[in-house]
Image (tube, rainbow, N blue to C red):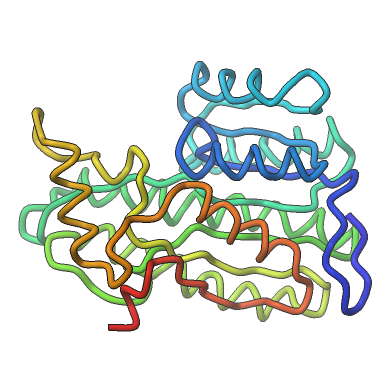
Length: 258
């Protein structure tokens, strides 16, 4: 991926790792990167889901899949090593994998807390830590983390999730400063409600999906929830611009501007 001063990054021949690639934003950004000309390593917990996405990209796309737990440091090291072994480089890391726990602090168990931090924070850190070594050798690259509006504002009943996404925001800023001299950009998109599986997760069985969507849309100034493609386009934008680093880009229909 060529990076020239003042010009957007050229995706021809670029290599991207996308976590949480089995659906939602991860699937959408994988499709957009593939269309732009990137080769891909898709990461997810469910091998069937990431293989489905891989197969749907077409035979002309050079793509590899790895299933595992991004909260496992050894697995994250393997992801980056396999990327370098297969493709010879790593240009973009999209840290999209995430989990939700719904409940106030006093109703959040040790296990719930640890699960959210393991995926939402540890995974981002482990993968980013390993990725920057390759990117420094190449003299450039991009990391885009998927945060949340709850990286920026609080919300009742989501103590663990808010904390994890706030940590993603601060890790993004810190690593942006650490990596700037090496032409590695580190940014985060901060989506609000997205029409994707996570929006409807962790509710009691039988929850009305349409009601959840409508309830979230009512809180957004534009009156609609985002699509996965809209968030994916923001990720590709941040990965493409070499002079944007340390940014937290809200994709929320005006939610945090209220």
